[in-house]
Image: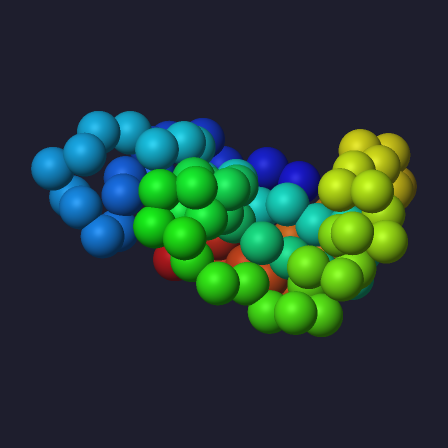
Length: 85
């Protein structure tokens, strides 16, 4: 699920340019920012063991068709109750 367009910069090194757009990804169990792989690669950010185990069980793949459009709308409203605020 893409939350919105725009630019996400490195939160540890603001002099570094664009990392990615501010996307949110989900497998219907976990929700993580699109730039997570960047932080793991560049800063060796440690992830929760349960998250890693879940990803490993899914062979590190996320089915892009997991959520219906209605489910995506519901999730978006839960995450961003007032997106224009």
